[in-house]
Image 1 (cartoon, helix red, strand yellow):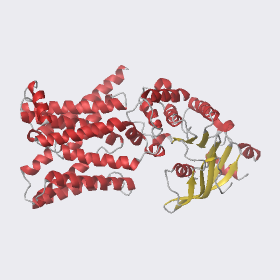
Image 2 (tube, chains in turn cyan, brown; image 1 turned 90 degrees about the vertical axis):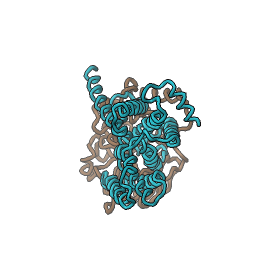
Image 3 (tube, chains in turn purple, cyan; image 1 turned 180 degrees about the vertical axis):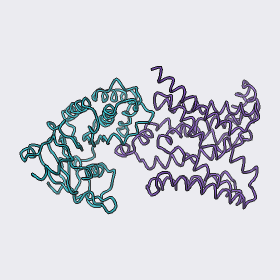
Image 4 (cartoon, one colour; image 1 turned 30 degrees about the vertical axis):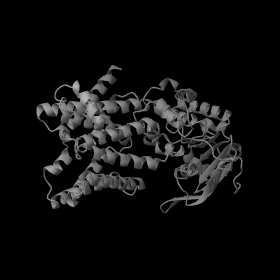
Length: 283
Length: 243
C-alpha cells in the first residue's frame, strides 16, 4: 500500500519511460539494488572478496533449479542454498584450508553444474530459468520491489551504524581483533549479507550479473573518492545512476535491462579511471 | 624470571609453547611486561618474537601455557608490521586512526575528532589527516599506525618492527614518539631488529634464541658482556656466544 502510494506520487512527475507502473516498479527495485549492493560491495572489495558475489550468484542458480525440480518456491530455495553456500565458503576461507580463491572456484562450478543438471531434470531449462539468470526487471512485482527496498534499508542502516567497525576489519583484521571486534562474525555477516542481496537482486540483473552490481560501482567510486565515507556514498550514487540510465536505455532501445545496467557499470569504471588519471596529472 | 604472574604485570604469558605444524617456534617461554616498562624483544628471523606477541595479544593460541592480565583488563594499543595494513584501502589517515577508538565506549563525534587530531599531532602527521593512506610514504604510514594505537590512550603499546624499512627522519620521530608515551606512563613492548635508535629508552631487553628466552635483563648487563644494542639482530647469534 505504502509503496504503491509512493510510486503513484513519484510517477506523477516522472518522464517516459518511467511514467508506467511496471517501469516505476523496476526503477524502485533497481534503485534498491543500485544502492544496497555497492554499499555491501565496498567492504567485500576491500576484503579482497570481489568475486564472492559471482560465486554465490552461481550457487543461487542451483537453488532456483532445485526449487523448480522439487516444485517449491524458486526464490525461497535460492535463498536457503545461497546462505548455506556463503557460510560454507566463509568456513573454508577462514580455515585457510583452500589455497587462494580455490574454494570460491569450487563453489562457483558446483553451482553452475548442479543448476544445469537440476534445471534439465526438472524440464525447466527455458524462459522460467532465464529470467533468474539474466534478470527481468520490467516484470518485478510490488511485493518483490518492497522486499528489495526493505533489504536495502537494512543494509543502509547497518552500514551507517557500523561502517567504522567494518572498515577496521577490512583494513587490518589483526588490529580489529585486538580491539575486541568479532572479526569472524563480521566475515560471516558479510558473506550472508551478500547471499541475501544476490537473491533479492536476481529479478533485476539476474544471478549471473548481480556480482557486477556489487563490484563495478565500487570500482568506479574508489578511483575518485577522497575518503572511505565518500567511497561508500559515491558507490551508491554511481549504482543508482547506472540503474536509472540502464533501465531508460533498455526500455527506449529495446535492449535487455540487466545486461545494459551491467555494461553501463563497466563504462562507469572506465570513465572513472580516465578521470582519475586526468585529476592526478592536474595536481 | 618468576614463574608466577606478578600483580604489577599488565600482561603475562607462562610456559608458552607454539608450533607451526611440526616446527616448534616457542618452547615453554615465560614473559610478562609491567606498568611503565620499556622492553625490547629481539632475536633473529624465525626466533618466535612475533609469535610471542601474537600469543600475548590473543591473536594466536598456544599449544600449552597460559596468557593472563594479572592487574585486570587493560587497554592495549597494537602496531602491527606495516605490511599487515592494506594501504590500498580508500580511507583517509583520519578515518584509519579513528578506528583505533573502537571499543573505547561511547564517544561523541567532536571528542573523536579531537583525539584523532591529537594522536596525529603526536606522531607529526597532522597535516596529512585528510590524505588517503596510500598517498603517504612508508615512514608516514608507520606513524599513522602508531597514531591509531595511541589514540586509545593505551596502558600497553605493542610495536612489531616499527622502524623496519623507514627513513632516518621517521626513525628519529619514532624515538620522540616513544619517549612521549613513556613519559605518560605507557608501558612499551618493542619487537625489532634494530634497537640503536631507541637504546637509551629501554629498561629491559629480552633475547629469544632456539625457541627459548636466552637473555632477560637490563640493557647495561648486555653492554657489560660486550653486546652492543646497535648490532643488527641478524648478527645477534655471534654476539650471544659471548654471553
